[in-house]
Length: 128
Length: 128
Image 1 (spheres, each protein chain N blue to C red):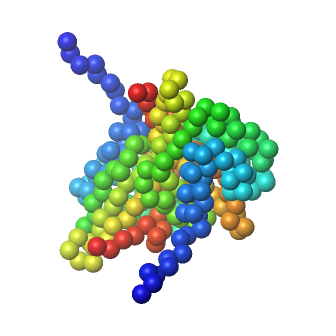
Image 2 (image 1 turned 60 degrees about the horizontal axis):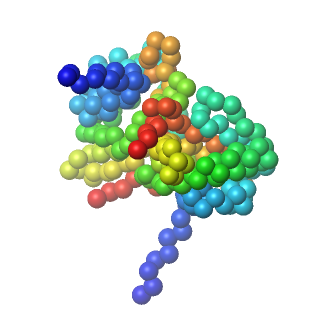
């Protein structure tokens, strides 16, 4: 018998695509995930970045720091949100830093991320 | 030498107190954590509960289901928020259920929780 095909929730797929894009420095994948008029607040309490050009610039800068990321638990799904714990590593071999983050993605009806909020603070940074 | 005393961030202490109160069914501890006019949205997308009486009623009902809880990762701190992944177990020995949740606490200047949002959906429930 063929194994049952369980179709994954598209919000979970978006999160997994995002984590992979962070690690592979894939700006095209980031572009495809976000709505043109999306906002990014990373970290929450900081400046809010608006629009695709500013968002792609933000990720380009992150990629230049040799970022990698991995999920650290289940993606929680509520209403039009996906919220997930993950770990980011920055600057490998050159003042490297580990950051524990929880992101909140809000999706529009087209399935694009229209708002991203990243919850982390200095208490969530460690250096090896 | 005495070990250095690191005073814990009070938002992290509040989260740890909350998780302990859920497991010990300690309504007094819940009462002390929340502002009188706080809101609770659990899950996000459902009804918003307003005010201390309604909130204590909500937790009393949860306690009657034999709830227990444990943190599942670091408490993320950003602006006046604490956001944390945890696991809840309900109905032990009687249709038990496991729920993976991320809560967002927002604190007022007095250090009380003025808003709680719980992110989880049916995809985050498992039965043994």
